[in-house]
Length: 226
Image (cartoon, rainbow, N blue to C red):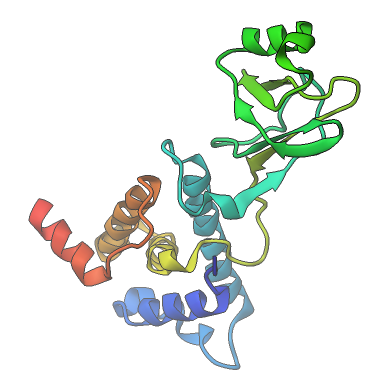
């Protein structure tokens, strides 16, 4: 999945900021062009990355799963029976269990008790098998028991100097990056629309929407419900 280009997002955010009333836009006039004020550009960049982190966290922690969560999944090192899955937010992904040292997709058991019965009565179950159970973030499996033999895909977000928001959410990233630049309460009215657009967009992302409608459609929806 392609992600947002921070240079493009910053340019679009700046263009909207300098189009605002003079009391706001004069802070950013020198931020465009070759003679840019580094402090101002860095302020915008920092804001974009803060919003990017919030959106990515929404994707990872979506209660019903999310179509873009897979881009944040990483495979754990081999774990032993009863080990703790690495700390994370959101739901874990696929589990792979080794049988005769060969890893393959695992099926979720019905309970931890089922796993323990499979281990204690391996002969009745045809030997080690690819079943697992995760309870309180501890993983149990019925695969090979003599060495660490289970791996888990789990979501990880590590903030960097680049955006990680899927490019289908570029507009939401812009809305949030604009509204975060409000400096004083007296400016609230000028940033309210962007804040509302941002909150609506984030709510749609949390619900698993793959695409966000254009700004005009969101504004029309805001007027109907306003």
